[in-house]
Length: 439
Ligand code: DLL
Image (cartoon, rainbow, N blue to C red; front, side, top):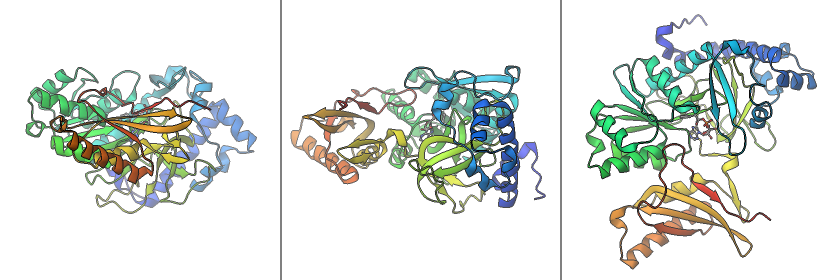
């Protein structure tokens, strides 16, 4: 204890002693549990069913006694049922569109927004960005948390923001060049599209001042990172977050780019077995469960993210004491089972991008034929390689089929498709279409 952090140097919070951090977490946990118990009926009822009161939280380990919160809780209480403050204290809404029906709604007090800005400021600093940077925000603005989240975070850092939002890619590239953007925030799939557009416009990204990309909102592989860095000359950092917890900025990589530091003083992480809901020992892969320790408009207690990762407890060379989580390779609900084999789309991406000549433009279609489920993978290759020479295409075709088979253990139907035939994404890419006939 005894460490004092001033407002000007919030990044110091990344380096506090473990003792200080755990004490801070417990203090915040006790307060937020009481606040939620007092103000959110659903949470109070669940606590009462378990014969629990906020006073039962005496140590951090006691968190395991608390009930989980799941996405359907947000849907079932749409729109404001999980709010824990009067509407007069709320200054912002965001919403995330579900695949079906009503969106989920989240809200913030001014203090909550301050926390959000703080974590992003700390995160951007960790990627080496400063007030001297010019940051282009190409995440969508609006109900999606990406645009406004990154925007206010970058302003809190003191950087200059170019708020382009998503879309109008040709113009984005022009502004990036003309304004001399040094960093960009968008989805990795959208940045891939920008690289292609720049090439088509005769702009060499390596020659631009752009040096960092803060990419997230969708799963992406290390292979994808290598491709992006080689094609553009920037450093590509991974940022993670979700609307229910706060938006972007729950965790982010530092300059070492090996795992994302989670802002544990605000978001308490646990990893559980998604089937048994047991808390797993540190280091094991499972479902990330998050508790917001300092968000008051809509606190989330033990929120099941469905995202699969592990906590990396080894010290990072950067010296930050807040722990890291591994790249989120998949969501538990992204997984599909084909003839008994569990397959994640990210495995297919890794296999495809490990073969030279492929592009990051691919999609996956699940279909049923003669009563059996199958996977079709469509991928574009480098236009220069797309040739009439049947023998060369066949060679590449079998190389790709083998690469996928080696990773997932199944033979897929692979199609090398014409350049530009796969739809480009300006936000989260939709990689998988499920056309299976349900039995
Ligand atoms: O995607 C917030 C965000 C905006 C994060 C910009 C990062 C950058 P949602 O729309 O609620 O919020 O989607 C959250 O996206 O549960 C993950 O499944 C996925 N996701 C987000 N970041 C990553 C990432 C925003 N870096 C859901 N890697 C999460 C893998 C990610 N998946």
